[in-house]
Length: 514
Image (cartoon, rainbow, N blue to C red; front, side, top):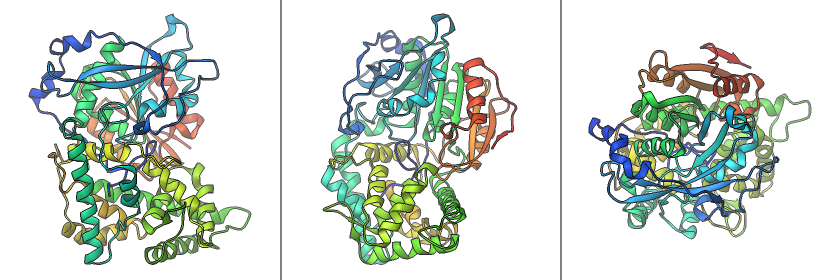
């Protein structure tokens, strides 16, 4: 199973990549003259397709702001910019402000890798209404994602089995089944998506961003990156430092670590989030229904997962809640404090033999809709991560590393360690150990770290600031819980972000919001 990083779209091993100096030259406007001069045909947005997660067409915003969608052509291979093209799906809603106040387009990437921006922006847009006073809000499906030439691997029935399998093998037979399942998934990706797999690296997406900037008519890229979107933004800043406009990175990926280090950091981060969840439950005035102390809450969860490893319980018919599905559901709930109440309910039900709520949380993590269809977020996540990340870890290596992962998180260590095998036999070689985000000369980038973030631990923000280079990264700390800071609605965080994006006011480096 893949390693973890996702929501907004779902979980993370986050890595992206360097391009050689030769390929860097391929981003020049002259070589892309044919695609940079294209005019987008904006139309009413269709309903999201299966790869985007399904559902209804996006509803107008409260002020009747209409969503518009368009397809932008981009080179399939940025090393051959005059060759074949692919279509990248874009979505926007126009600014509410006067034309004289408009700054340009603010492009969002909500994370993953593998999340559909075309589906995500309408879902979260009300939280960005203040930014819309001076920007058109824009997002997109990155290459390999959603409607943008999606990576396709296994079908829905196969994915049901894939996400139910035992992801933490206890013996040779279980290990063999896990490895066989991973190989089967990866082979299906190659068979169904061979043409796109070599061209979904983060460096490719960064070049797409610069093309998007040009086609939208902006001299600079104004950008809001969340989770993996911070990695994409950092790679863009490295490739095109002189084209960085006003940019914010929230829920920051550490660009200095390799996939193993990133997974280990997540083990620590999710364990911290679990500790905070347990403390929160028992600190309330009413009795905590899932334990009488924080340690008791965690001990009971550990016993539940051990029991599920031997005997799954009823989930959502006809599926049962396995240990792996329950672990995914718990992880999903720890992404946001808003989900802690559902986690408490789900655990209480599971102790009584009903696994439906934990399975709903697991389905959300894995991109499964109520009708049993999966979006392509897992396929895209795997393809992008494996194309980006050079290291390949086999089962023997994982087993040697298990003690350190278990020390970092008794509950999640095994799962995150075994997730590292996802790229072992991938068809495309990985590009680098970690991305290069150095961006000397770029405009200031506001880098927002959350001390309680489980998926992108707080230390990543400081590492990003240092890696961007002197005078570029400006660190802001939020002492909160959950994945990301802006969407917490903390007035201090939102005031600092809005002040920079709307008025160009850079907050003092080291600002702390509580």
